[in-house]
Amino acid sequence: MDGSMNREGLTRKPLLPMFMFMAIFMMGCNFAHPVTPTYIIERGLDQSMQGIAYAATMFTMFLVAPFWGQLCNYIPTRRIVTISGIGYCIGQFFFLIAASNGMMVFARLFSGCFSSACFVAITNYIINTTPDLKERGKQLTLYATIQTVVSAIGFFIAGMLGVISTETPLIIQCIMLPLSAFGMALCMSDDMPFKKAPDKKLTAADVNPLAAFVQAKSFLTPVLVLIIGIYAFGYLGQSIIEQIFNLFVKSHFDLPSSYNGSIKAIIAAAGFLVNTFITMKLIKKHELRKLILPVQILMALPALAMLVLKDFYPLVGCYIFINMTITIRTPILQNLCAANAKPGTSNLVMGFYQSIGYLGACIGGLLAGFSLKINELLPFGIAAVTLVVTALIALALNAKKTE
Image 1 (cartoon, rainbow, N blue to C red):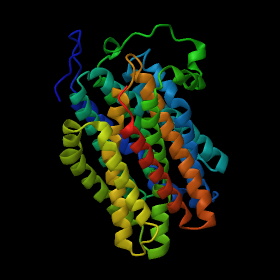
Image 2: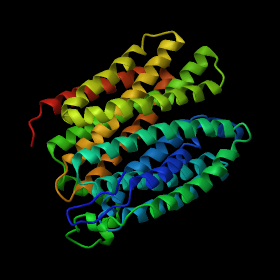
Image 3: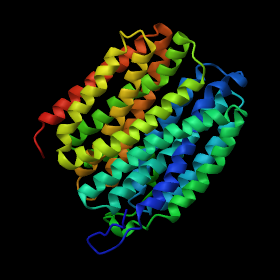
């Protein structure tokens, strides 16, 4: 965790303090999820709001992530982290007071605009200030591990706080988000000297989020298209499973709500162990492009098995195994994407990468809700097909010659 030095001898602050505040922030990000179904029922909102609210968040995250990636070229990423914490807090306050379907959708759209900023900024900060590829891989793996573990912990804690009242975790969330964002920003270096200066000044046209998509043709390569395709289709499949699995097992096995917290705790512990003892070693010793294919195959197999399994424990085992493959593939894909970006375009590339993943999650959330009305197994079938397609894209990447 020592500070990193770039080619000009500039030293970055150690990442450990930033990671500590980041853990609190990401824990807070998950405080709304476990109480949202109860919140919808208590306020007499439409049951479809569960899927629609999730899709609304992912839609604006998709829309603005490339803009935040572009902005990382022009201002310190620590400033974007601060903006994210304030904006996300305001959005969640709107969510807290929402009393209608329209207000809830607006709140989630607003929150999505700012929550994506922090994730894009942190990824770019690590990439910008860690020029050594092996060290960068280590830090991105640690970042993914923290995200997996604390997200599950946040989900569990919020579920316990929700016993007090539905509003309790939301009020605490509104306090945690800006304070932890400020803490992160204070622990981050000014990364402007680490980055290549943009060729032109930021203009009003650049502030348009859609402009970032137009610029994609200037930095996308065939290899990057395949990498981002793997990320997007995989995110789509995992989002469908995430939205449907808990509802499916609850309705079939008549389980108390506390079981979900136990599963999340297992995922948190297993995710930590997998990334600490497996993923980091794989990234150090093997070519990343060769790793992603077996990971995607291992992700698709349990999704296919869920279509035929009937018993509780095998289903839960498949769900946990899918989550483990997600913890492995996340740092691998982040490293692949950053390593294949053209010089000076990594901020734009990572913003676009995050954005297309959010689009996959948005589509996944909508598909989960609509397909469930047709047949309860149809969402699992769509997810399985999507993950098989993801493995095929990984096969194409594996066969692609190095550019």
